[in-house]
Length: 562
Image (cartoon, rainbow, N blue to C red; front, side, top):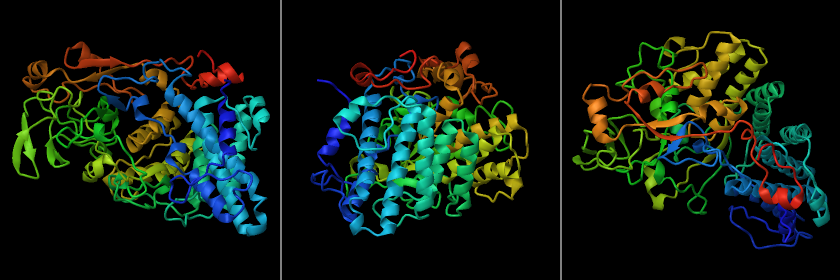
C-alpha cells in the first residue's frame, strides 16, 4: 500500500474527527456537515489545543541533561527518517494543519449563523494554530510540504516541498492576521485560546530561529508593547503546579487530572528517597554555566569555590538544581559517598541514603538532580501531574528582543533594560536596584551576544529551549561532540576526591567564550570518569530527516546526507 502522511491526514478528515471542549474526543461527524455552526467550529478548534499537537524539544537532545549513560538518536548521531519521534512529529503536525485548513474553509459555509466578530475570530485563531504548526516543521525539517487548503486524494499526492522562504512568509502572514484580529486576553477557562500577544510572540520565535533578526525584534517589541504581560515575581514558583494563569505566561496548555490530561513519566526526575529513580539529571555543563553573583563565570569569579559549588551563584542555579545538604521532597539531599544515612524530615529520623551511589548504584551519576518545577504534588495521584505546559512565556520574548537587536548591532538602552529585567527578577529585586544584582552595562556586540546566550541557558533550563538555541547558534557540533562526565565510583571517589578535601569538584573547569565548560583536565587527572560520548554530525543534523515513508513512496526529497 502506498503510504503518504498528507494523504492519511486527508482521509482522517474525511472521517470528520473532532474534539470537545473538555479536550477529550467527541463522537465522529461528517466532514460535509460538520463545522456548520459556532459550537462545532469551536469544538474543532479546541481539538488543535490537544497536547499531541504541541510537541516540544527534549533537553535530552542537548548538553543540559543526561539519562544515566544513555544517549538519544540525536546525541549519538544515529538519527534517520525511520526514528519514531520523527514520524510522529511529521504526522501529528500535518494532521493538525489539515484540521485547521478544514475549519478555515468551512467558516464561509457557516457564515449565515455567525456574526462577523465570530468569523474574524475563528479565522484568526485557526491561522494562528496553523502558523504555529508550520513553524515547528520549518525550524526542524526545513524542506517541507505546504498547503493552506483542504485536499482531496489526488491533490495530496501531487504536493511537493515548498521553498522555505515562501513558507516563512506564509507563516508571517498567518501570525499577522491573527495578531490583528484576536483579543489580547483569553476568556476561556478550559482552553487557553490564542491571543494577539501569543501570535506576536510565536512570530518572534520562528523569525529568530530563521535568523530574521529585524522581524524577530519587531514582533517581540510589539508583544511587549501590548502591556499585557510581566515577569512572574518568583522564578522558582513560576513552574510549580500550584501556579496558574501567571502574568508571564503568554501561551500554554492546561492540564487536568479530572479530564485525564496530565504530565506523566516524571519519576526519573525525582530522587530515589522521594519515590523516584534519579535517572534523569542536569549535566555538569549546565551546572557550571550558572554565573556567580558578581556576573562572572566560575573560572573567572573569585567567589566560586569548587568545594562549595552552590555558594555565590545566580539564584536560578539553586532554583533549577537541588543544592547538596538541603531539604527536597521530605529528605535532605546529599550524594556524598560518606553520607550513608540522611534525615527524613517527615519522621525526624535518619534513614539509608539511597541518593548516594555508595548505597544505590543507579542514583544520579553526577550528583545533580532537577529541582525546577519539582514539588510534593508530583508524587500524588499515581504520578499524574497537572502542571501547566508553557509553550512560550514573557521572559523568552524579552530575551528574543534583546538578542535580535544585538545581532542587528542596533544596541541601545532598551537592550540592556531587557536583559536586566530578567536578570533582576532572578534576584527578586527591581532592575533599577543595580547594586543587588550584576546589571549589564556594556554595549559591546560580542560581549552582549555572550551574555544573552548564557542568560537564556540559565533562564530556560529544563524547558525544551536549549535544543533550538544550539541549533540556530551552530553550537551543536561543539557541545554535542563532548563526553558526558560524572563522579568516580564510590571507593575511588573517596580515595581521590573526598580524602584530599576536594569534594565536590576537585578543580575549577575552564569555561570558553561560548560558555562551555571543559572537564577534560579533571578527567585526564583521574578525578572524574567518562560516562559516555555524545556525537553530532554537522553535515546533516542541523536539519531533521524527512520521514522515510515520505521519501520512498511520496517522492519527497530527503535532506542532505541522510
